[in-house]
Length: 81
Length: 395
Image (cartoon, rainbow over all chains, first blue to last red; front, side):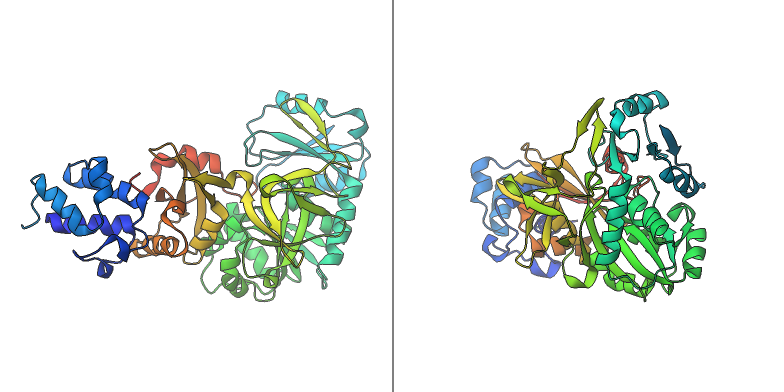
């Protein structure tokens, strides 16, 4: 499973969205279940899945799937497999 | 004081017939109790002398798990049965089929006593402990009434074939927890000739306070209007209290007798509100409503949401999240397929913001049940590590 697929599974599970609702362009404003508690769940989920723990500033700056990818890529987690 | 103990497979209705006619009071002890003979006798010895005649005592552990010996008055209960009979515009009922243990106040008053006063034939069963016999009895029913708790509906689905149909049951009374409004279509197929009622009360009410026909409201939390003579109101934070001429006269709890007086407003243990038409909406047990991140969470509302897409059993127990905030875990039974548990989560997402969602969705093949037919929440929570976890919030 690629990191992109792992992130897709994680976001679908946390946000309780259907697979067809998910895309790499997904933004916080697109999903009503992406609230502040979801941000905490995303941070914990990324730690469990990718081994990186967002610091509070990073976590609160996340507003899209692309933001997550950008942060994780700076930590050496490859999304271009 | 005469003590009647319930034992599986042996009906206590004959013993009840006998002791009800005696002056001296009696006690009914359910089969499943952790109390020793000595503890029971000690508790009964605390009952004042003036209640040692013309009364009866029921042992309940309720939702708190603390044993409580609740004392009812025979004459008041007989009066309640007459009021219920009148309120329900009953057509001719010939039989009462007992599906719940008679140590449970709802079954004792709504089944055994009602049958006795109206000279109905009382047919005892062991409920779902012996589903084969239960089915045989229901197959042969003629103009019968039964009393159930909502948690038993999944058991009908589990034990009886889909095309099963019991034409001889004309009345069904539900009490003891969440009314299965979402299963009314199924209940209608299973019992095509039955009029269904939602009863609400508590053991201190001995036991009924309100009543509604199933079709008179569309949501499970509507418990109807108070029955004749009963007054209901709310105190702080929607805590429901009642006065009733049929209520219990006192109880023994933690070794002390506590009297219930005529002028006293007695807590039902639930929260709710009165509607414009005089009916009441139940928010749930006091402990089924809690604050989470400043939001008021109602377990009864969550249960209603789940029941829109899930036919099986539903229960919740409370846990704390990693921030120390109160949350709950949803447990369903039997084990759902992947598509089913996903649809439950989708329904919750549709109906509520995330803060209301349970922290986990778990399942068990079979719920543990109390002898009253209600889910044994203490056991469910205690054994929760055996549950299958389908989904969790990572918080």
